Length: 285
Ligand code: KMH
Ligand code: ZN
Image (cartoon, rainbow, N blue to C red; front, top):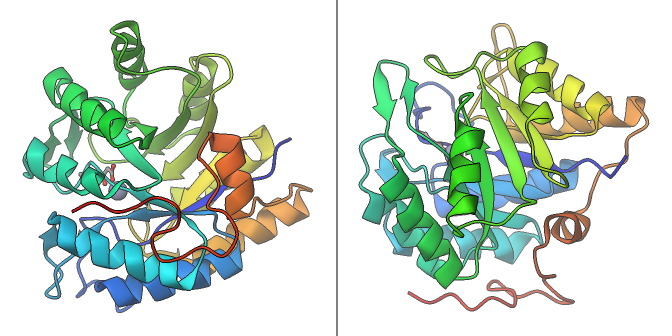
């Protein structure tokens, strides 16, 4: 099996600071969290940005500050969200791509999200993909529901996307596909040849599905975006969630990928020796 790539989704858009003291709200806090998670075994940090009051930010300046704060402290792969927060416009969601992050997510379809609707129609997906292509950003396909992979295949048929790709199955969002082993297995069966995949399950299913993915040869995403508890009644720190899946992987005989190894597996250009805060990828505001 290839080495396990651990992604940490450290902040997200939905968890608010009053729910946990461990949410990295500022760019500096995110940079420090990313470095601790990298030490614990994470290869990728999935980035959402917040304003100091915890509200969601989409302005490229805030993302630039976060990117710099992360890169000053570690060589972890930087993956921006383009899902943003519910209610953001397509332009807001795509704006940080101008900073040329190494990787960014593309949610592959509209889905119920609790009592709200996470809108991802084809025109929006095409707009985001065009912006990724213009900035040389490697997409990670986010699959929340059963039809989303078919949507991604349609975008590929239109020539906007090529396979194989890295695909992340986000399971257990209320209103979308439940976090079950059966659902995961069904989704993996539908992947085009050569795709790599990871699973990000919500809440208490996070560690259970991560263990299954590790055994199946997939990769994992953990972090406060999807789950704020380490166990019932005990709030988690991001790095603890990373350390736990790394321990499980080692117990199962699976090695864990360093960021450079993850870059190689995912087709991301290497950072190079002696990375700077911008790495080899100049940020353009
Ligand atoms: N905040 C969610 C509505 C992503 O980051 O790409 C969507 C999300 C997906 O978090
Ligand atoms: Zn996210």
